[in-house]
Image (tube, rainbow, N blue to C red; front, side, top):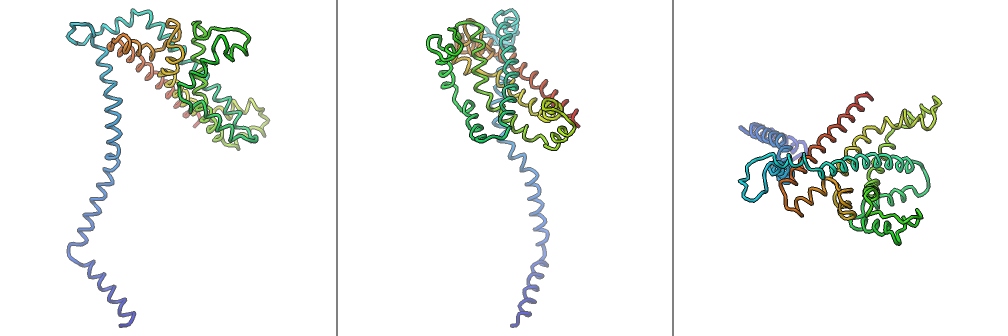
Length: 318
């Protein structure tokens, strides 16, 4: 048989298969089923995430809110009550701890943004060994909390601590109320600033160079270029970092508990420490849940506020 004959036979067989009754309908049905599967596939992929968050996040939050409206007194029927919140309103220790938490959160947010911006500005310059410095910068963030606290406890020791040696004074860092608060701020800032510096550095590198060059041509100095070009360009990133710093400081527990334990007295006690003490030292779970609800409300208010500011900044740039 000639090649032309083989070609014609192949075409005839293909045409015959395409003309088999019912085959086009079957292909159309298969394609339709695949389209339906593709449409439902994203929902199937989201189900494990929703199940995880519902089990380990949403359900504990709802359970904690319900527990805050119950009484742990002996012989109580477990009916809902607002006694825990009434006790909170008349508890001077709670109000002192709330003030400590707000001051601690505000200081941490401001210092994280300032220190991160300064370090990012220094690392944005071109110098030899810059990549090595960037790698070393991540060490504090990567260290576990226990070695970090032990290192600072040794540095703050009033007898042989290196910090007192540098200052030339013997300071009671962990027994003086004001110094203990400053100590936990110092430890938390040192532990967390690399993350904020690296994110700020990536935002600085994303600022268009042509805008900076145009500002130079217009005669703007270094400070003027920063306030008019660089800062507006990284403002959304700074707002996001402010939200993360707010959450980081509000839920900070291990560094405070391992260093000062919330003392002396309640001078360095935050809401997270107070919740732990009420739940696991005094076994007052309902009262601890009420304090946790207050912390949840503060988290929501702060997050919404920062997100609102970020959206306003983004809209003002358009």
